[in-house]
Image (cartoon, rainbow, N blue to C red):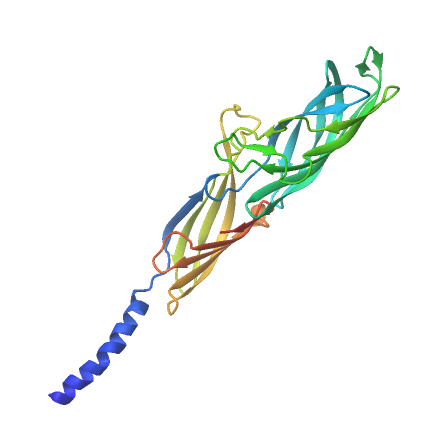
Length: 287
């Protein structure tokens, strides 16, 4: 009897140590989480933008404004081309434009750097006469970090938000400056909110499907007040380590969503990841 009781007492610590392993669980079924501008934003900058700055001539400052459509692709590249109306003070002219640049995330600051070139033919009437013109601009912008303000691009922490020049045939050149209070409003619906929705199947390995949804501007065929979303589809592969009670899940974009990638780490029983790392729309995600 005494010998049997000793054996049971010796077995008890081993049993207690094994309980956490037996209870360790991997995430399974529907798992979702979301961020917004107040927490950890992600941006899709596709949409129409109105740029207003100033050009400085001989003893004068004249407003310069135009609108362009920017496309933000899955790698983070910004591009655009087409025709637009350029306003020089009271003068109005037509121009072709091209835009090229990229998005980056450094710390908590999401930046957009790009160039815009505009060219107008000699059919434009400026100062009462036909003149051709060209505008060359370089933008260095960041998203306003204050969530109390409407989403907008503002000046970088250091440097100038826009610089460049204007040349009008027969009239000369002018320098471009940002002007006081320079901001560029983001399109309706571009608010930094995004979410991940997963359906995880826990077999020998973790598998399943996922969608990453990023708030975006309204599609051209929808009303401007109707925000749209960008949906990126992904496959799930992952591992579960009972000894550590940790699950690692990797989301890899399907062909139409590449090169999107996201790695998530879940602690035992949690449905919200404790760590997120990856790259989406050219922005390094590290949470």
